[in-house]
Length: 229
Image (cartoon, rainbow, N blue to C red; front, top):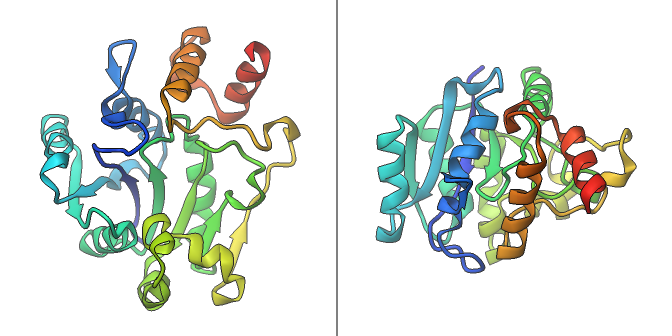
Protein backbone atom coordinates (compact mmCIF):
# COMPACT_ATOMS: atom_id res chain seq x y z
CA UNK A 1 0.00 0.00 0.00
CA UNK A 2 1.35 3.39 -1.03
CA UNK A 3 0.78 6.08 1.61
CA UNK A 4 1.83 9.70 1.16
CA UNK A 5 1.88 12.83 3.28
CA UNK A 6 0.56 15.94 1.54
CA UNK A 7 1.24 19.40 3.00
CA UNK A 8 -1.25 21.94 1.66
CA UNK A 9 -0.09 25.53 1.55
CA UNK A 10 -0.14 28.74 -0.43
CA UNK A 11 1.77 31.98 -0.16
CA UNK A 12 -1.06 34.51 -0.10
CA UNK A 13 -2.88 33.46 3.05
CA UNK A 14 -5.74 35.90 3.55
CA UNK A 15 -5.21 36.34 7.30
CA UNK A 16 -1.42 36.19 7.44
CA UNK A 17 0.11 36.76 3.97
CA UNK A 18 3.34 34.86 3.39
CA UNK A 19 2.58 32.73 6.44
CA UNK A 20 4.29 29.63 5.13
CA UNK A 21 7.62 31.52 5.10
CA UNK A 22 7.07 33.30 8.42
CA UNK A 23 10.34 33.28 10.32
CA UNK A 24 10.71 31.63 13.70
CA UNK A 25 14.21 32.16 15.03
CA UNK A 26 15.52 32.61 11.51
CA UNK A 27 13.85 29.53 10.05
CA UNK A 28 10.65 29.48 7.94
CA UNK A 29 7.47 27.82 9.17
CA UNK A 30 7.47 25.31 6.31
CA UNK A 31 10.87 24.01 7.43
CA UNK A 32 9.58 23.39 10.96
CA UNK A 33 6.61 21.46 9.56
CA UNK A 34 8.81 19.32 7.32
CA UNK A 35 11.27 18.65 10.13
CA UNK A 36 8.49 17.24 12.28
CA UNK A 37 6.62 15.15 9.72
CA UNK A 38 9.91 13.78 8.39
CA UNK A 39 10.18 11.94 11.71
CA UNK A 40 7.26 9.75 10.61
CA UNK A 41 8.08 6.26 9.38
CA UNK A 42 5.90 7.13 6.38
CA UNK A 43 8.25 9.95 5.34
CA UNK A 44 9.26 8.42 2.00
CA UNK A 45 6.41 10.20 0.20
CA UNK A 46 6.14 13.79 1.42
CA UNK A 47 4.74 16.28 -1.09
CA UNK A 48 4.00 19.98 -0.79
CA UNK A 49 0.83 20.75 -2.74
CA UNK A 50 0.46 24.39 -3.70
CA UNK A 51 -1.23 26.22 -6.53
CA UNK A 52 -0.28 27.04 -10.11
CA UNK A 53 -0.78 30.72 -9.35
CA UNK A 54 2.33 32.85 -9.88
CA UNK A 55 2.18 33.97 -6.25
CA UNK A 56 3.08 30.43 -5.21
CA UNK A 57 6.26 30.26 -7.27
CA UNK A 58 8.34 30.94 -4.11
CA UNK A 59 6.98 27.69 -2.66
CA UNK A 60 8.03 25.81 -5.79
CA UNK A 61 11.46 27.44 -5.59
CA UNK A 62 11.77 26.42 -1.93
CA UNK A 63 10.94 22.82 -2.84
CA UNK A 64 13.56 22.74 -5.59
CA UNK A 65 16.20 24.21 -3.30
CA UNK A 66 15.40 21.77 -0.49
CA UNK A 67 14.78 18.67 -2.62
CA UNK A 68 11.14 18.37 -1.60
CA UNK A 69 8.50 17.03 -4.00
CA UNK A 70 6.05 19.72 -5.13
CA UNK A 71 2.70 19.45 -6.86
CA UNK A 72 0.87 22.46 -8.26
CA UNK A 73 -2.86 22.55 -8.87
CA UNK A 74 -5.95 24.68 -8.39
CA UNK A 75 -5.68 27.74 -6.16
CA UNK A 76 -9.30 27.82 -4.98
CA UNK A 77 -10.35 24.16 -5.26
CA UNK A 78 -8.08 22.70 -2.61
CA UNK A 79 -9.96 19.38 -2.57
CA UNK A 80 -9.26 18.90 -6.25
CA UNK A 81 -5.62 19.86 -5.72
CA UNK A 82 -5.26 17.31 -2.93
CA UNK A 83 -6.93 14.53 -4.91
CA UNK A 84 -4.97 15.23 -8.10
CA UNK A 85 -1.72 15.36 -6.13
CA UNK A 86 -2.45 11.99 -4.53
CA UNK A 87 -3.50 10.51 -7.87
CA UNK A 88 -0.39 11.85 -9.59
CA UNK A 89 1.80 10.13 -6.99
CA UNK A 90 -0.35 6.99 -7.01
CA UNK A 91 -1.12 7.16 -3.31
CA UNK A 92 -3.67 4.69 -1.98
CA UNK A 93 -4.03 6.77 1.17
CA UNK A 94 -2.87 10.33 1.77
CA UNK A 95 -2.29 12.21 5.00
CA UNK A 96 -3.59 15.75 4.91
CA UNK A 97 -1.41 18.27 6.77
CA UNK A 98 -2.20 21.97 6.68
CA UNK A 99 0.50 24.55 6.20
CA UNK A 100 -0.37 26.21 9.50
CA UNK A 101 0.13 23.05 11.59
CA UNK A 102 3.62 23.48 12.98
CA UNK A 103 3.16 21.02 15.84
CA UNK A 104 1.93 17.95 13.97
CA UNK A 105 3.01 14.86 15.90
CA UNK A 106 4.69 12.24 13.67
CA UNK A 107 3.60 9.48 16.06
CA UNK A 108 -0.03 10.35 15.34
CA UNK A 109 0.70 10.12 11.62
CA UNK A 110 2.26 6.70 12.16
CA UNK A 111 -0.63 5.41 14.26
CA UNK A 112 -3.29 6.55 11.82
CA UNK A 113 -1.39 5.29 8.78
CA UNK A 114 -0.96 1.92 10.47
CA UNK A 115 -4.76 1.82 10.79
CA UNK A 116 -5.10 2.84 7.15
CA UNK A 117 -2.87 -0.04 6.09
CA UNK A 118 -5.72 -2.43 6.91
CA UNK A 119 -7.69 -0.92 4.04
CA UNK A 120 -10.80 -0.90 6.25
CA UNK A 121 -11.40 2.81 6.66
CA UNK A 122 -12.19 5.60 4.18
CA UNK A 123 -11.15 8.37 6.58
CA UNK A 124 -9.18 8.33 9.82
CA UNK A 125 -9.17 11.61 11.73
CA UNK A 126 -8.69 13.31 15.10
CA UNK A 127 -10.61 16.44 14.06
CA UNK A 128 -14.21 15.77 15.23
CA UNK A 129 -15.02 17.12 18.70
CA UNK A 130 -11.61 18.85 18.76
CA UNK A 131 -10.23 16.83 21.65
CA UNK A 132 -6.82 17.53 20.13
CA UNK A 133 -5.73 21.16 19.72
CA UNK A 134 -6.19 22.79 16.34
CA UNK A 135 -2.79 22.77 14.72
CA UNK A 136 -2.34 19.09 15.56
CA UNK A 137 -4.94 17.74 13.14
CA UNK A 138 -4.13 14.55 11.26
CA UNK A 139 -6.47 13.16 8.59
CA UNK A 140 -5.78 10.08 6.46
CA UNK A 141 -8.00 9.70 3.42
CA UNK A 142 -8.54 6.72 1.13
CA UNK A 143 -7.98 8.15 -2.33
CA UNK A 144 -10.25 5.77 -4.24
CA UNK A 145 -13.05 6.76 -1.84
CA UNK A 146 -12.37 10.46 -2.29
CA UNK A 147 -12.37 10.03 -6.07
CA UNK A 148 -15.83 8.45 -5.89
CA UNK A 149 -17.29 11.11 -3.61
CA UNK A 150 -15.70 14.38 -4.70
CA UNK A 151 -18.57 15.04 -7.12
CA UNK A 152 -20.62 15.82 -3.98
CA UNK A 153 -18.32 18.73 -3.10
CA UNK A 154 -20.60 21.32 -4.67
CA UNK A 155 -20.21 23.97 -1.96
CA UNK A 156 -17.19 26.24 -1.68
CA UNK A 157 -16.52 25.13 1.89
CA UNK A 158 -16.18 21.53 0.72
CA UNK A 159 -13.80 22.54 -2.04
CA UNK A 160 -11.69 24.57 0.36
CA UNK A 161 -11.65 22.33 3.43
CA UNK A 162 -11.55 18.85 1.81
CA UNK A 163 -13.04 16.78 4.62
CA UNK A 164 -15.95 19.03 5.66
CA UNK A 165 -18.35 17.07 3.47
CA UNK A 166 -17.55 13.83 5.26
CA UNK A 167 -17.98 15.31 8.73
CA UNK A 168 -21.41 16.57 7.70
CA UNK A 169 -22.36 13.29 5.99
CA UNK A 170 -21.23 10.58 8.37
CA UNK A 171 -23.06 7.80 6.52
CA UNK A 172 -21.13 8.47 3.30
CA UNK A 173 -18.20 6.20 4.25
CA UNK A 174 -16.52 4.06 6.87
CA UNK A 175 -14.86 6.55 9.18
CA UNK A 176 -12.62 6.14 12.20
CA UNK A 177 -12.57 9.15 14.51
CA UNK A 178 -9.96 9.19 17.25
CA UNK A 179 -10.36 11.20 20.42
CA UNK A 180 -7.84 12.20 23.04
CA UNK A 181 -8.79 10.71 26.40
CA UNK A 182 -5.40 11.19 28.06
CA UNK A 183 -5.13 14.96 28.27
CA UNK A 184 -8.56 16.59 28.54
CA UNK A 185 -6.96 20.02 29.00
CA UNK A 186 -6.01 19.90 25.32
CA UNK A 187 -9.61 20.14 24.15
CA UNK A 188 -10.30 23.43 22.41
CA UNK A 189 -6.74 24.74 22.47
CA UNK A 190 -5.63 26.67 19.40
CA UNK A 191 -2.10 26.05 18.16
CA UNK A 192 -2.77 26.52 14.46
CA UNK A 193 -1.18 29.63 12.96
CA UNK A 194 -3.80 31.91 11.45
CA UNK A 195 -2.81 35.33 12.72
CA UNK A 196 0.28 37.19 13.91
CA UNK A 197 -0.83 36.51 17.49
CA UNK A 198 -0.66 32.76 16.82
CA UNK A 199 2.76 33.08 15.24
CA UNK A 200 4.03 34.92 18.31
CA UNK A 201 2.49 32.27 20.56
CA UNK A 202 4.20 29.32 18.86
CA UNK A 203 7.46 31.27 18.70
CA UNK A 204 7.32 31.77 22.45
CA UNK A 205 6.58 28.07 22.93
CA UNK A 206 9.58 27.06 20.84
CA UNK A 207 11.76 29.47 22.80
CA UNK A 208 10.65 27.73 26.02
CA UNK A 209 11.76 24.34 24.72
CA UNK A 210 14.91 22.89 26.26
CA UNK A 211 15.50 20.51 23.37
CA UNK A 212 14.92 20.60 19.63
CA UNK A 213 11.22 20.95 18.75
CA UNK A 214 11.26 17.66 16.84
CA UNK A 215 11.75 15.78 20.10
CA UNK A 216 8.51 17.05 21.68
CA UNK A 217 5.35 15.01 21.24
CA UNK A 218 1.91 16.59 21.21
CA UNK A 219 1.29 16.01 24.94
CA UNK A 220 4.58 17.64 25.92
CA UNK A 221 3.76 20.65 23.75
CA UNK A 222 0.30 21.01 25.28
CA UNK A 223 1.74 20.77 28.79
CA UNK A 224 4.34 23.38 27.90
CA UNK A 225 1.59 25.67 26.63
CA UNK A 226 -0.48 25.17 29.77
CA UNK A 227 2.54 25.86 31.95
CA UNK A 228 3.21 29.25 30.41
CA UNK A 229 -0.23 30.45 29.33
